Image 1 (tube, rainbow, N blue to C red):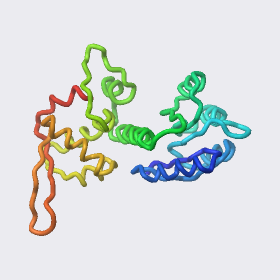
Image 2: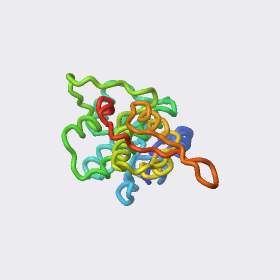
Image 3: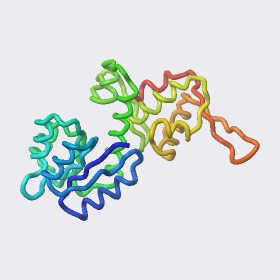
Length: 235
């Protein structure tokens, strides 16, 4: 589970963030604090993976925490959640290496996307021992060659999650698998995964069959077709 620290001095906003976080698979709230000092004490002595960080708070602000974390080389990722939308704030956040920036007020869908993509990238890093340049360009740094035409994905799908799903699917080769089995291995919800499997069906990367058992409901089993040329334009 990804351990999360919420740093927010507004109790109502902190509660919204907590409720949103509970809806995303793979995350666990460690604690909520209202000051930079409390936050820094926690990240120094606990294994926090991700901070959801407000910027403007009494006394020291979010920039102070970012500076302290980077100066002390604390291994933690940060998503800024702030009403600040001026150019200098965005530039400063990028310099500090934040992984995403959500401007208040924001919709749950934007919050959900940010956390899903972060979780996907973490899982992808853990699955690989070594990266090639094309992996980094397509999955993390988004530096696609202008000569390569990247196909548009259906609404609701992201390239990072598609890449993670496809990596897991192709590793199964000719062994049939169910949606539940794949969802458990990847760590995403069955509802989200079904969208990606449906897409892979539509571009003929996998095929799906209904397996009827003697007892209970039928199970949908998927298998790789061996024709993976069609997916390259989407990754």
